[in-house]
Image (tube, rainbow, N blue to C red; front, side):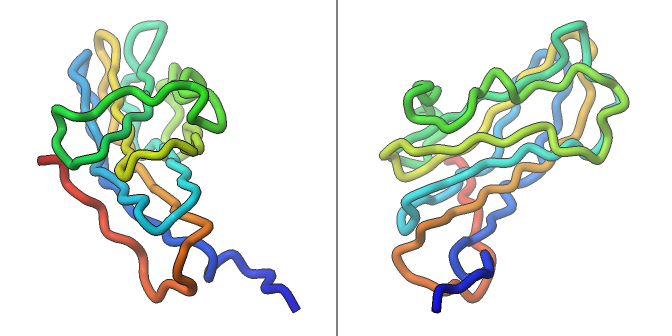
Length: 149
């Protein structure tokens, strides 16, 4: 009989909180996809003091074969499920809400998101990664984020 729960088929990873201030880019930690065939990254607004100018703030998905921050490259749209352009926030009142999520189907080992605001942006967001289609199941605990080097 097939399992109906999702717990044993995924591994959640908290990739950290990202503080967005003005136009300075800020990145989450890396998610290691070594034993997963699928990865999803979820952006959760914590506190949006100011989304910024009319365009607000937005995120891009990045991947790499290493954890070196300098090796990060923007993921091609053909390697995503969903559109990175949809990961944007323009409302100051978007506190405590999911801003969006995007799936990664690329072949690189590490994946993360990088957010960039517009003039006046001031927000704190959490990034949650979910690895699925794991090569070893079930997992006993949440995964570990990998800091960029």
